[in-house]
Length: 299
Ligand code: HEM
Ligand code: HEM
Picture 1 (cartoon, helix red, strand yellow):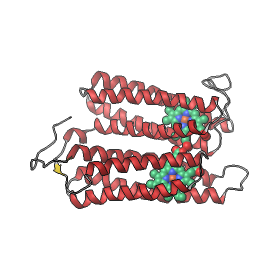
Picture 2 (picture 1 turned 90 degrees about the vertical axis):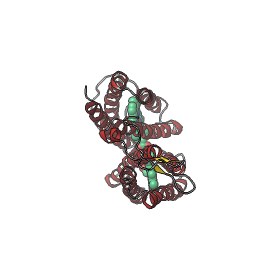
Picture 3 (picture 1 turned 135 degrees about the horizontal axis):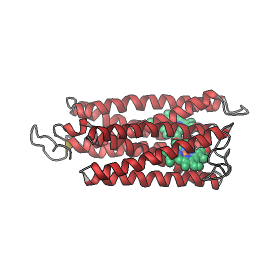
Picture 4 (picture 1 turned 120 degrees about the horizontal axis):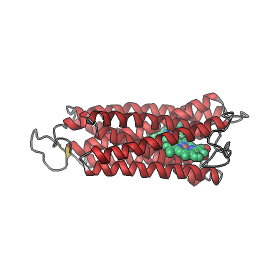
């Protein structure tokens, strides 16, 4: 089958995974994690009555199962149709991650939401989403078209900056997960926002100043800029809505809305930073590049 269908399928799986992240965040924000006490069945059934918190918890499990099956198909499809060995391996890695994620999800229920497990489940969800987005990118027509190589200028190198930006964003969302699951307060996450936003800005300004004509670098960098700013705004909104509804007897819609969107846009922020890093590693050469040289097609 044509590679375009593999790419479309990977994009579909990325969309389903984002939907799954939203569904998971709804479970946490509704405090519905223990509304189904057993696992892998729900109240001993495949399909319990979908009422109250069960709607969110069992709904999340159903979407997770669908994403799991879709990931099996993606891994097998890559294994059969994809010529690049490293991309086949990435497909198997994604499958391993979703299986482990399902086990972590089960453990959150069986052991009644232990904080380290809930935080790990939240973090791995974000890594899994980024992996599927990266696979979508590696199978795209834009990737096959390639582009011109450019020489890195300045220290620290752009590759190091790209890794530092993605790394600090991952640290930031791990701190966010720790806040959300009450492992500790919000202060480290707010300080982390300064670090992560600073690293992202440093990376983007360097790309725009030194490689402003390279569309393969500029476009994802501008997308990362827009998403990161939205995420900071949503973070403040999530924090204020938590404060404003702290005395409410049950989770309020305004808090649920802002916190869930903050989790989902967090996943988009990390994934976009990963795409920027991939582009930097592909096009920016640490040593002098031959002027006008292009990356080999489909490498
Ligand atoms: C397989 C792919 C899965 C993904 C990508 C995923 C993703 C997520 C995400 C993003 C959250 C929200 C975390 C947060 O807001 O901090 C969440 C919460 C949750 N997930 Fe999953 N999940 C998956 C599978 C499962 C499975 C199979 C179960 C089985 C029980 C499960 C049970 C839960 C529970 C109980 C919560 C709420 C945890 C809490 O409030 O502490 N998940 N999930
Ligand atoms: C680049 C900036 C930021 C990123 C990438 C980010 C990311 C995240 C993520 C991914 C989560 C949820 C983790 C999970 O459980 O899955 C989270 C939670 C949270 N973030 Fe941020 N965040 C950022 C900035 C901020 C800022 C500036 C604030 C403002 C105070 C903030 C406040 C919060 C709060 C209060 C929570 C917990 C929400 C809850 O209680 O349900 N964030 N953050």
